[in-house]
Image 1 (cartoon, rainbow, N blue to C red):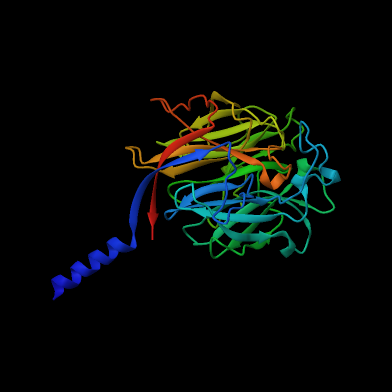
Image 2 (cartoon, rainbow, N blue to C red):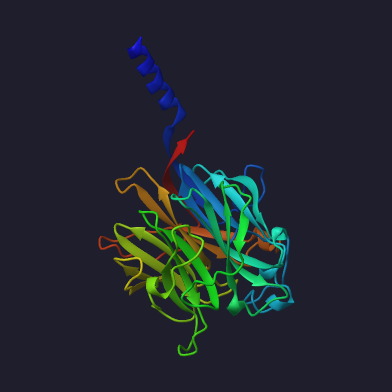
Length: 358
């Protein structure tokens, strides 16, 4: 009787969790659509894998249209599409990076007491508190200089929200007058923010990048004692950070600000998340996109993971709607020393994706 019960339990476990492996073809010339047939409206956000499911958080820019030009920031004070007050954060999920389901708006700007502009949201799940934590750039209404944006933080008990605001101004950072940023979670659960700042008049030009450790609850940072110090080129933005084989990679591009031409990316590496970082190689700008994320995805090859570079192709939508702008994804390849190879343009590519189906 006991033996039969054990067999039943084993069979049920096998049914509940099934690991599948499939080849997925991803296109950069056909709009990505959700299961309802709508074009994915999520940009300059974050894509990551958690518990067998891929999460794609990003601002919804909707049907807003603006005249094409070399930069989308030139008219932001006049209400450019990237700086509207009514942006919400969309969430899409996928088991394989191919089939995407819209889960709704997980954070809505109408929930704020103080109106303003939101962009560049990044989300992590804190394994210590089990909370989902979102950071985003915030420009209080009626608007301050875009170079003086604040960082806001919101939390949720679930991935699908709703996220509730904790603060609209993180004041613990080593440097103020912050710009673009990204979040990185290490293997031990420690989290870091990589961000640019342009307040210190000693440095000229401005827009310099650094990495800083977050508090245990991810709701603030630990300041200058846990900051890498500035490194790499100046006049940079749109950072991404990841870890592979014990090496920490910090990538950022030249200042672009919703530009149609995109921005080339330079790589910096270190054996520690807080540096020191060494400047490595230039990855090019063959996809004419602005970086917003590097995704570590699960695969069945010997290494276990692959890496996708992801960027926004601003002013690329056929109908002119910012919410329909394309995103450009491309696989990242590494040589035997861990150097990322130059990224050539690819219209379509096929990758081996492993996922858990429940």
